[in-house]
Image (cartoon, rainbow, N blue to C red):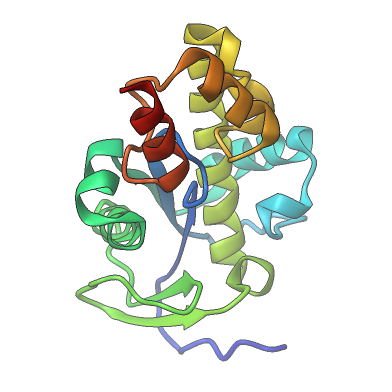
Length: 197
């Protein structure tokens, strides 16, 4: 599938990581690539090995014209809901770019509030290089935050499941309760909190 690219100077790609997990911020990235410095191997971050993702993230930071990593906090997710918090984080990523893009490609089927022209692209992280780059930066950033959280709460195994709702995560919630980093608006977390009362 060929995505039609507008004939403009600066195109940004935006993607998020962390809509599904029960813990931590939702992290977004916006990237404007430099056409004169191609990066080989850009694709959906989920299709890459961890080692490859980390290497590509460094290359993107070195070669991109600019990038911005943004987020919405656990409190904002609980306050707004995950969809609205994700849109807010995407807007922050685009607004944080040093160069304002002429057009933005956003992964998914919804557009955040942006002051520039934008196109939503389903499976964009596989189809648009700028979105692929954004997905890699967001994923590496969030994974690193989960590793830091794992050091703080080793009993939860965040390094393994990255906060997603897995059997191991549910078992840890049952045993150890809810951390201050858990999203209390998410049903599995609410259920644990209700049981503990």
